[in-house]
Amino acid sequence: MTILESTPPEEVVIKLEFIKPFESTNTTRFVLKPAGETSEVSWILEGENNFISKAFGLFFDMDAAIGADFEKGLTAMNTAAQAAAAAAPAPAEAAAPAEAADPTEVEAPADEAEGGEAADDAAPAEGAGE
Image (cartoon, rainbow, N blue to C red):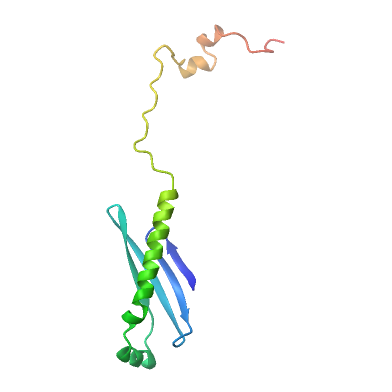
């Protein structure tokens, strides 16, 4: 299994290489769509069906053969997602409003703070005038 592509939080594409019951290479896509407070996951398996695999499909119910594995995989994915969500820090309910400024504290206008008239009343910096 090789991850070919990942587009969080929308899709993961995986290359699967099977050995049994016969060799084949398929592409699996996990497509995630928001569904309220949860996500809907589509698990899509794509691959070429040669003559042997087409004949095999006529006599063999693939859903019965691998459906349980799909369900087990989706259950494991759900368990992992829920565990990750539980471990993640909770989002802030609402951003706390900025603390109101103390009305007794007034900032000097920029031109005064940079050496204008108001700066003359300030105490000289340590080491100034030496």
